[in-house]
Image (tube, rainbow, N blue to C red; front, top):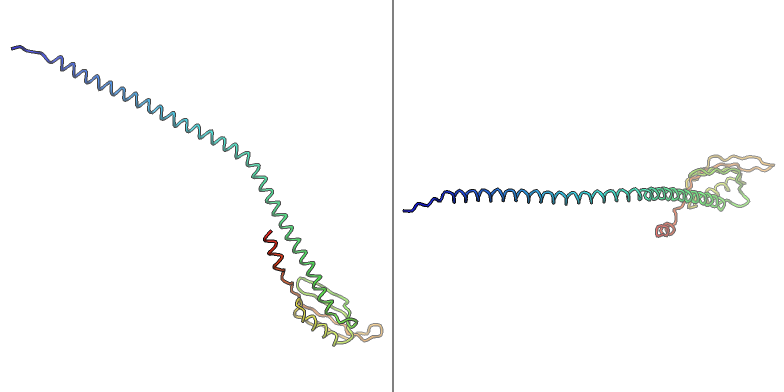
Length: 194
């Protein structure tokens, strides 16, 4: 019989298998390192891109901060002007209100029978004093004022006879409440449309 020694072939195959495993391990390790370096550089590139974009946005924000500041100043001035317009409108209404109240009083006066000597206009009341020919004239004046749309609660404070330049006249004082007429809805509606 012939004896064949297969041990070196087995050892050789074993060594070859170990060498292949080591080669595959090192190749896998190299591929893993290359992959990690590639992924790291890609992520670092994205981070740098985001940082550059952030810096650009911050620079743009600084440029627009001036515009935002100007817009706030303009809005503040606009609000101030609007407040002034509202104040002017209130003053205008108050001025016309006083004229309307005086017009109501003048139209209620009995001509050549009553004369006013003092008139005080308060926020929502008027104090009147004057002289009249008689008490009936004072009563007529009070009825006319009471019938007016602007006047209410007409009260006689005092009435006494006084001799003025040889004539017996009635000196009187009275108070009345006045109400401001409602603003016309047409003008406020047209202002809202503008």
